[in-house]
Image 1 (cartoon, helix red, strand yellow):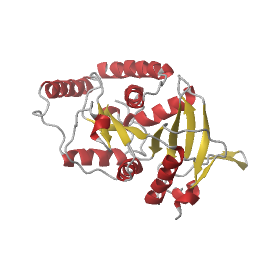
Image 2: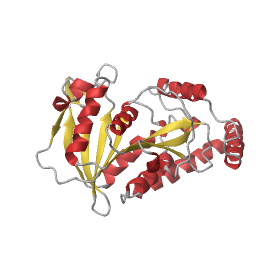
Image 3: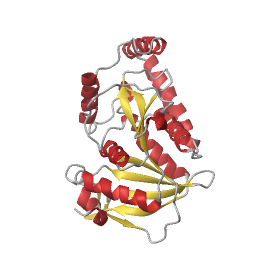
Image 4: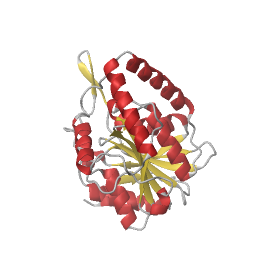
Length: 295
């Protein structure tokens, strides 16, 4: 598949030299919907327009993720076609940046990544950055941590490594970062650690944490707006549910003790092994199609 045939670019694109490309793909791991909530928040609060579209017919297996259709009385009324597009946005200070958003391709990953790299070169993108949430054995009552990874250690020097070496299911975002680095581009990503018991629910607090990390790494002026209100509402509901369940409260208390011990003696407290983390990721992916569970 020719990568150039995978996308169409708007004829009127301003000079984007030195801009940042953010990306988030639906379909892989996004505990607490952290990445999706952040991407949607940016599109809802900032001026934007689509400047490039990818050929979803060539990249998506509709039978694995069937798009919704609307049936009205006696006829088919609408079809929600999936979109994998690049949005051009302007931050609160008027600086442009890009957001690649849509379903993770089911096929032709390498061709898709070459296509994205062509756009990175074409527009003079200086940094590519992805973001999502991962399920971890951490309590919601403690500050959320972010795992940073990048093609150069200098890009994530303020983030303490959490794992040494681990194998997890492949994903387009990770492969994109790897391939861009091999091609000499700066690329990085953030993973917000979401309490595992909230992984299947929307957890705006994790999106707020990601927004802060993205803003610091890129220098973009990103509005927090309604996202913080949603986080406060969600946190209040979580505290209410925990207070009503002695069993859940005991789990949270155990996680608090484990978390506090880890913070006090970093490197000496047990943390998930590579096999344990890989198994946790596999369980999360297997549960992606299930209805959200309550605490």
